[in-house]
Image 1 (cartoon, rainbow, N blue to C red):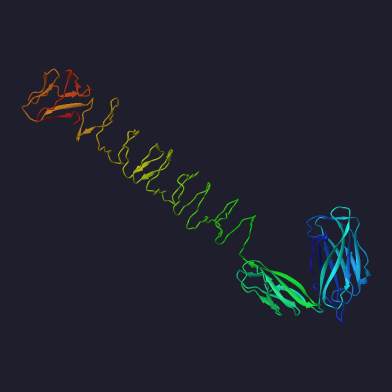
Image 2 (cartoon, rainbow, N blue to C red; image 1 turned 90 degrees about the vertical axis):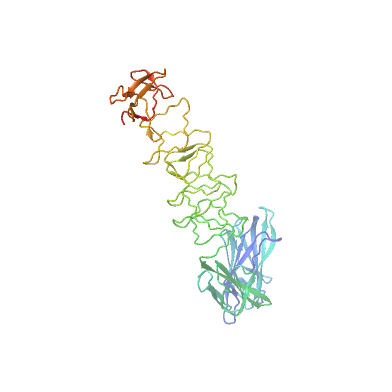
Length: 502
């Protein structure tokens, strides 16, 4: 059978079908009856109007004829169309199909039916002539010729039950197809195989290789009769469990799960995901490409991120922005192993304890909200200022200063407890002191700035004015005694000065 589309003559397309399929000729023992259905208008691309279709069925006993009993043909049509009774004239059974009014075909289908056809006994190919009264507009209708071709197979010809042994096979499994058929030339077309595989008289066929995707099969039977080759085809398909897919455009409306790798074989193509790409279950998304992950635009990470290896920004002019926290794996600290160190152009806020095993250099401010612990040196050697509200030594140990201390003018040094200088306690303003001589028969004098002196110890065991209170005088450590005015404390040979508490 043939499908007649719009050509230079007709405006309407026609598609014939038969029942049974294929149509068989009668034998001396049995008359074969069949039907021919003609679908009109399917697949039309340009609308057309029609007010009448006439069908001419060849009547006779030859291969080119359909039946010898043209007057017995019964007719039918889609709603709105009325068929005439067949009129046999000039070797044709003529049937006219007329609509109630002119019909515009825009894609809808009208079916014309010829039934109760007593097929003659000669196999061959029959051309059924069609005359349509049509127009591009609803007016000026003219007759235009078309035809459809119907094959008549030999009496008793069988071609049916084409099906696979299993409608679904495993990926890579060979499929086996079977059918029933009379003697004919059979050719299998399958998958993307352009040429069929000749089967001759076989009724079973295994695929030459295992299937990896859903595969369609078309089996064509060919017999020669009436000087022409008659062709009939059957189709089936086999599905594959977990198939390989090759698609042009893939739209996934729901979740997509990949149990294995996903690759883009064409490096010039992109994988665009409008939603999220996630790892299976609670597992993280893994990128195992040796070259790593390259992000040409902004990368927004809204949850925690773990990097088991290095993260690099190959373009030095680009920034890595993190809205949340950057942390080391598990309980491990975050490490910056770049030889050039870590450069912070803005404020660095540290809310927890920090440990620095090497030098820290900053060109701006460093604000530490918690404890700052340095296991190495902490150097502030510039011209700036170090401000410390409470300076202490290590826990349980004194603070050591291994450098000269220069207290600038206008600043006081306040010591709440004792001050030790050179291993000895220093005298403070307000201390009470005792003056003594370690050697007997020597006198101890208190000298005034005028050069006169006052005897403190006269060589006996009686002391005079032995206890003195120290008052601040000036930066030369002068004192103002409680009874004799100003004087300078000096230590004579063989004696020392002690506070009254010693």
